[in-house]
Length: 256
Ligand SMILES: C[S@@+](CC[C@H](N)C(=O)[O-])C[C@H]1O[C@@H](n2cnc3c(N)ncnc32)[C@H](O)[C@@H]1O
Image 1 (cartoon, rainbow, N blue to C red):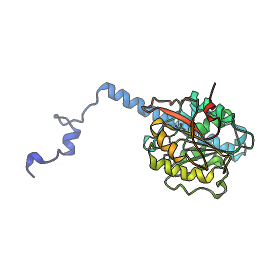
Image 2: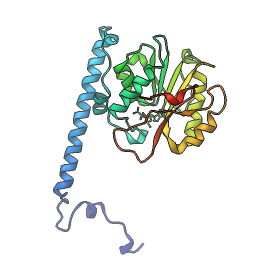
Image 3: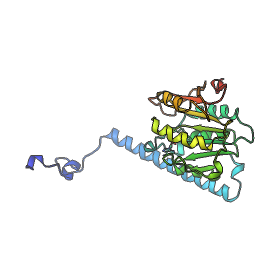
Image 4: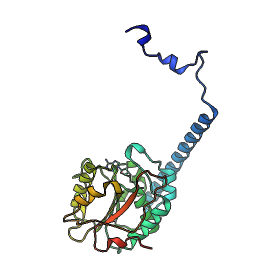
């Protein structure tokens, strides 16, 4: 290797010609500053929520206080893009909760797979003892520990045995927009949904519509119908999202 092929030394990257560390321009500094302030505020809110829920659980009073609102959730639980986290808007979380509540009776068992904001919205506006959040991200366990089940769709057959064939409704928003992910999620759904009567509410991008239509074409879930409710995320997404339902008349789900 000749001298001019040698990689730059770290020093040459981190210093300018005068030998002093490079200075960021004021706009970048301001952006970084606001990013770190936002992160610190998010951590403070998370710690506060975790402490409050733990105190309520210790006093066995957690069922008496509804969990935080979708807005409080969004401010305390930052999206982790490596886990493909993109939160719904507060308005959509509330509309979805109300549409789901219309499908429920007090005894209904409802699971939220990979959609924490949907769980939070539902539990905030229509608290329901038989609701469960099945998620990979353990942060959400602080919201309501007895309603949280750690779930990794890469191990789709791993879930507590008492959940087998137990759910009247499953709401799912798979993290990745491909067939492999949807096949894994369906492996779980098929095993935890109540045979014959269970309803699936699938929230995902229209770019995987063909995949989900092919996967759920047959029993036990049956053909999926596109519903009336319009999905909205807190931050604009490039993909068009929609909601599908597996039951007869699902087209009217979310109709105003
Ligand atoms: C596309 S997001 C859906 C979130 C939804 N928009 C909401 O606001 O509630 C997918 C979710 O899948 C979860 N996730 C990522 N990897 C996972 C895995 N291996 N198993 C189960 N869930 C996973 C993420 O934590 C994230 O909450």
